[in-house]
Image (cartoon, rainbow, N blue to C red):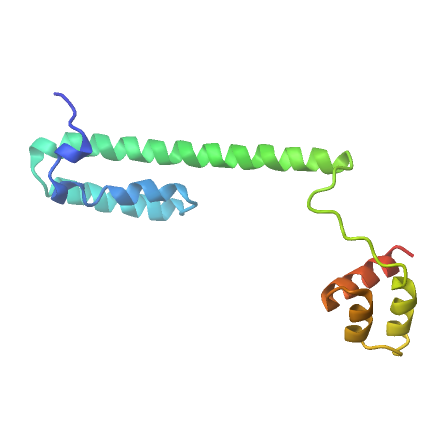
Length: 143
């Protein structure tokens, strides 16, 4: 018997199949089993001449989803290994921090001694408050 494409099968018989392709995104095994039971019970109520075809499509979709999920997991693992190796070799990720102005240390000390507010110190350096605070914490952590 020649398999027909999904587009050749009456729409009412295919409505239950698209949900199968969504199972590759981390759904639990119980959910997949429940979905399979629902699809099989739905297929058994349909025209028996299309049951084998629809079950074939179902099995194909399940295998495709499982293969895609396995591929994604392997890719994430390889990426994580590559990133870890690069970091171990001292590779820097992301943009380099902007250089701090020459008066930063004086302004940081004035801010810490409460002579200046965070906003005043940041404005004097020409950076946002969060950047000034982060740079101050970085400098203090490296001491």
